[in-house]
Length: 289
Image (cartoon, rainbow, N blue to C red):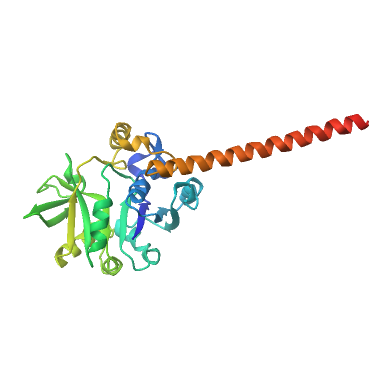
């Protein structure tokens, strides 16, 4: 399976913080926001990832993450020319997906839950999709799902009178047919291709599964308050201990930090040797004089 992080959009709800940078590069406690969805994917064993960002700040992602080697991943990049909705941004990942199943995470979403079990379950099914639901206080701001007989009955996008408090979070799993589904979508009244319409396709097909999140779900891009709340949630969770290399276990941490130490020591010894040679050369030159 491959991972896709959608990190486009204008970030208007976080302006002026987003005046000179992409919102997904803003700090959330002790790391840039985009590190959290990357860690969620890596922890679930998905290390081949595409980041879809908007124009203007795509180079900043490259500067921060490069090829992904520093975080033990392979990272590719795609540019969304203009905002057109989550589904439209996802459509840009078709070539990258390479006809494999995909896990999609919105770049401003933070998940405390480990997604490994859900990923493994999804790998085992021949086709379909999976969404992740979380009880929230303000469901009208999200796609809202209603459950009946332990199955999703329907999903309504940003309802005025929500039938439940189960929000559809920003993590989705899809089979390869998702890109054909997107091609058949019509823009909503917001003139966007809605991810809810994609999920409803799988619901009508009878292949949509769901998971209920137990840990916290932070939607950092909703408001200044949600950004601050997410930082506090991270501060008091295991995610605060995740370092800049996104190590998922102690053995990887030892290897990565050991390699870094070796490189630093090697560089230090080399620099010392160069300085020593230069100093010796200058002393010899003075003696000749």
